[in-house]
Length: 340
Image (cartoon, rainbow, N blue to C red; front, side, top):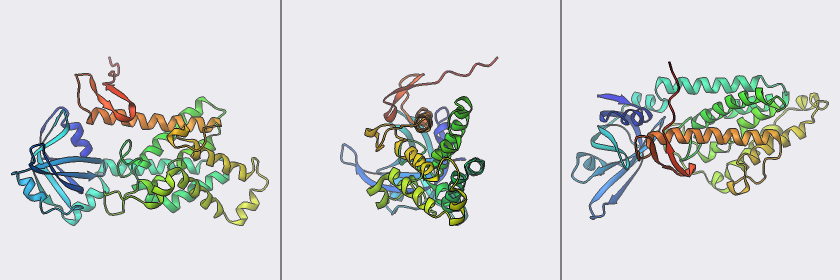
């Protein structure tokens, strides 16, 4: 029996339904009823690559096991996996508890996942270290040093895009690669400011969408609920900036542009990155870097959503899939790249 991650499972069963196993944490369980009044359980299971929901129908072995589940258990789910018009379908599945070593391995992710997150973090760190503006360079490196662990385990969103452990890190790294490419084309852009804006634009999600150090069950944080990730991001910038020592501040007094102006421009990028007032930004993008950041963020989020849609949405035909909510339309299979 092949053992896969959730991401690998989604991809595999598109063309090859069969018997597979996955190591996961149960992140929620709810008892429900069918239209006929028969009870069943719905379980959400998660690993480092994402989450899915499976059902335990009455009179199945899975139903009997689900009756004793309290939630948060680490288990191996083995069964027959396929897709239908409702998404992923798991049949004849059973649970086995994981041992401590298996839990640690599941939490860390497979080798490919670990390598990707490590490479992404190293890339972000190298970009921050290369910044020419000493204020922004020190600010970015101070952030990575102080919040690096939390940054590594946070998600890019709760549901829509990069909704997985490490998703925020992946999102920021890909946005930085995009910013790097765009800045070569539009050379008037302030690269130091744009790269710093990419790093800080979603740091508030380290509270809005943060996983605990020892699990995949994302809690709701009262600070994030009361303030939102944009406001928290501004607080983080101001807090780190206030922590600059007096020696640095004295050395930077004669740098142009002035330090306070640099900070305000960076805060503007965080405040305006959603692009519209109705989307949650208190101000519209009003500088070239703010406009660039908004569109870079939008590009990465929407491309992530459409590729995820090919794995999860109902096929309406060989080429067309059902609507991805945030993309507002059905999606169509992309054209294969030309090859001789």
